[in-house]
Amino acid sequence: MTGRETAVPGILAIANQKGGVGKTTTATCLAHGLALTGRRVLVVDVDPQGNATSGMGVEMVPKSPAFAPDGLGAAIIQTPWSGVFAVQAGRDLERLAVRGLPSILILREHLRTLPPDGFHAIIIDCPPSLGPLTQNALAAADRVVVPIQCEYYPLEGLVQLLGAVRQATATNPGLAVAGILFTMYNGSLELSREVEAEVREKLPDPVFDTVIPRDVAVAEAPSHCRSVIDYAPRSLGARGYVELAGEVVKRGIVR
Image (tube, helix red, strand yellow):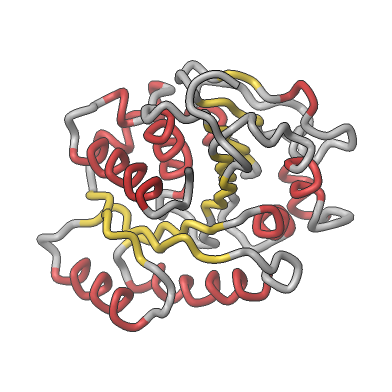
């Protein structure tokens, strides 16, 4: 491997069963932010919606390589973003989400076949559910990043998600929460401040210092197949995700 040397990559699942909290945006923008530090990052899209795949400028495939019988193999592709690679979502993921998978260890087994020095980080974009696809991601990951919008309904779902992470340690004892990430944050709203304070004060799990502000550029960027870091590098959203990548490295979540 050329450039920065690496040992075993950090595997991060971006998970929350609540939709619309910024999971896919966090997966792709964190990947881009880490790549800008000279790291090689693999994004594995296991969400049937395939938004991480399309947002990185690549297309869905008929069958998801993440769960294909023959494994990842040559399915890893380079995205248009330097240093960011992808395992595309397959159009069969919706069926797999409904019918289930023969094992929750398929993704873990496939990721273990990758060369240990191939990537510095592997980021798994999960669907908005706690079904078999997310269970596979939790069984494969070292750490979980939990994006949460600063509202009370997402806060209720957060406790359920953290419980699912703890249950997943029965299969994956090394799994832990990397951090809860506040997204779409508006510091001028009392509700945002109240939710942030409640999570930071009452939950035992770590919370990222970085918060991702509400920013229209973050929502616009995927329609151009770009991350907000590239689309609007001076925007508040871009700065937030660059800071998040720095915090992930500083805390040793990704080396």
